[in-house]
Picture: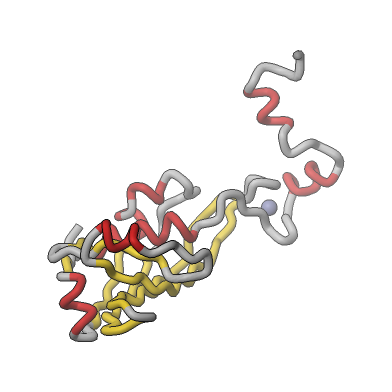
Length: 165
Ligand SMILES: [Zn+2]
């Protein structure tokens, strides 16, 4: 991996710094397991926010497309990815724990002087990707088989050795 920026989190936020770049999807090993193929490129933009609801923060945007497998027809399914998230920075884990987490509030992370941007992006990708994706309308032969009453779990039952109890 050539592009490996590291930021000083609080300094980056305080100065309203900005960083952008791109990585191939293949550079995210923790994401790859969920994907059909690791084709494509993800573009990110990271901005420092001096004050976000009382705390310094980082605003992260990630755009691109990921290649999944449709869970109904098992065909390829391209998923457009648009992440925009505000991360509140805390100086210590104790500071994070001191405030009750709001369900709809921003995510909180502990800032450090050396925060690898790649890890920040990968963490957000893992939170953002859907668990089981399906086409709105499947096309092709496999889809017809599905419509003709084949259970989507038929293949799984085969794997687990039949339906005997
Ligand atoms: Zn499908």
